[in-house]
Amino acid sequence: MVGREGYGNFGRSRSVSPGIILLGVGVFLLVWRLLAPTGAIPLLLFGGIFTGVSFSRGIRGLLIPGGILLGLGGGVLAAALLGHLSGALGGAAVVGGLGAGFWLIHLLERLRDPYGAGFSWARIPGSILLGVAGFLAALGMLSVSFQVLGFLLHWWPLLLIIGGLWLFFDGRRKRGSRWA
View (cartoon, rainbow, N blue to C red):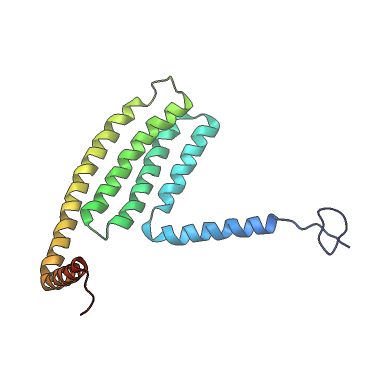
């Protein structure tokens, strides 16, 4: 007999709180482990605190450090991923994150007051930084394409073999013959 509704086999209520706490601690430690080598944790943490206090207490001025730190933290994370391909791509990620942080200031203020013009100045440095990031990203893509081209030129006999195999099997397929 199971007992009253909501109780387990032993007649006492089973709480989901330990499971939720264990899940939360696990997710936190996994995120910490993945982000710690990048150095972005303090930036994202302080940016989140400034932005949260700005929204909860209505202190508009805290959106500025909050947006800048959140954008910079996101840029550092992206640089950690893209920096292995090219240093210019890593730099573009940091500069682009900073530009996105300035735009975040403007957009969060627009969420707070859709018809106000507060912090519209933040679009100017944000756009300039995003333009510089685009230029750096173009340089990074050029660098990566030269690396790929150098790799292909180094292994050009392998490309000849692959091309020959493709022509061989394509000719056999078009004639419809088997391996005869």
